[in-house]
Image (tube, rainbow, N blue to C red; front, side, top):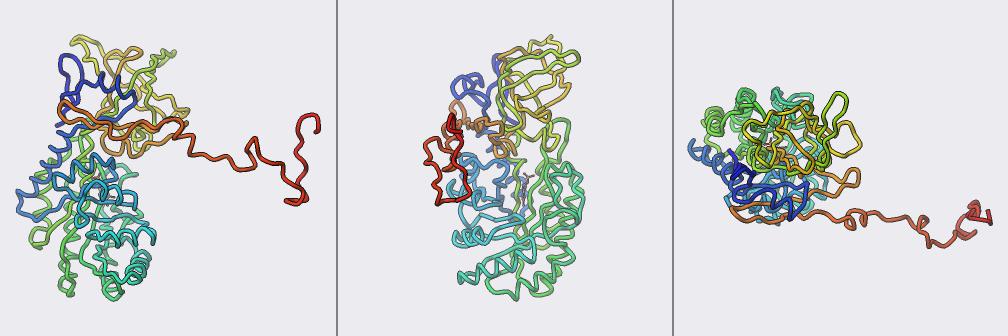
Length: 445
Ligand SMILES: *Cc1c(COP(=O)(O)O)cnc(C)c1O
């Protein structure tokens, strides 16, 4: 459930009419709902509390790393799962307690490791032997002992889109689960490391519990084997990945998910960490855009918007579906028309939907893309030299711009002309390079 609803014929985010945000902040713009974020966090955390499991929710920051979003969740008690030093810095800046931060990811640099150790976070999740050895060197060099998890790859098909499936043998993530006991033994022998946890994350947008059951069952077996071998396993990190309804999907509700976790690993009596991202923020955000033109081709009707693939790349990258809805509520008898909904970027891939049936649109109409709170703004770019999209957080009748729209000066000002390209650059002297011909300019040439 979310808090984007029509009131008096106008789509609102909680108590704020979206046309107001469009007028005051401009479009395209991401709009997030505090009430939806809060609700999703609570539903998820409460589902685990009801099972009696000792569970910590470490919100997966990569889904939406705006500090206002992280802070909203941190104030509800969330920890954070981060995958880069940048995300770690954001989580710390947003007030997430260091003891609830987990550092995941397949390629942490030595500098990132050192930063995380210095920050004193809860755990670093290691994904390869090479990374294990590197972390040992960095930690022992700092005189530290880092709590680590080994991320295992359980070779389970998450049955999700290929680009977001991570738990099969051929994926780059984790250590083959059959090799885990030997690598745990290596970790125990290396200086600077305290191997205390097993981590697993098999993919994203899962709509079925069966792959989880298979993966967590294998993790539980591994935990028992390691305990029998004398390892002090202190908790399990079970990753994220629970899907959301973008269209007709019917993902399992959080309480069914939590019960499945209790059934698969509960008898170990270990605390668990969960890393939901999409499930918390996905339906808590929309991308608000304006129709620039309706273009009637011979065969197709295009709605050309002011938002593009650089603002929301999921359709181009993952064939992602987003509900597209008019902000002005359609009349009850309005016959939907089929549109190809596209952006202004010079790529045919800049297409949000083809043949989508929507209530008739006119130039200047506002529309929203639903379920755009996760993997939306975080993936935005300035491709085609379009300004980085702003973000707004609504709370009841209030809203705040939580990331302003970039200015052209900020975007263009990042570039530097090389010395030799500057109009006022001195001519190269003969001593610089004997071969350099004098600049051929004008009549001298
Ligand atoms: C991406 C990721 C998550 C979050 O996935 P969602 O599908 O957004 O819940 C959790 N853990 C790890 C290690 C990840 O890489």
